[in-house]
Amino acid sequence: GTILLDIKYDNIEFSIESLKEINYIVSLNNKFGLVNNDGKFLTDIKYDEIKYLGNGNFNGKIKNKFEIFDRRGILKK
Image (tube, rainbow, N blue to C red; front, side):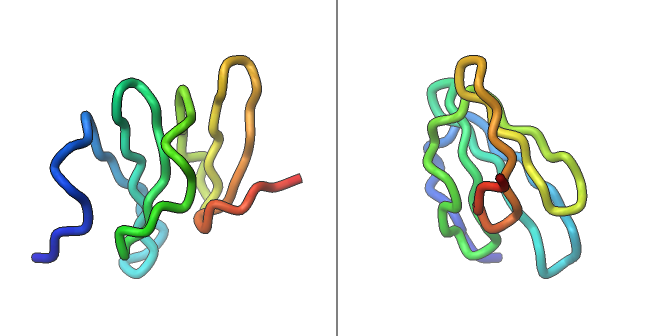
């Protein structure tokens, strides 16, 4: 196996689009961020919550504001 992330996060969960497209939702101190399969952070760890919506899209919540971004961390308008 390959170590993608340091062992410092409170939780790591994954979403799988295909075996080549795996994203990880990491949490640290009750904040969440999105990491790709290469260990690169696609978002900052700043969200109060991140949920996988399907079709490669995620919903990030900061306070009462919601942002939708894709599997590359690019915000949708």
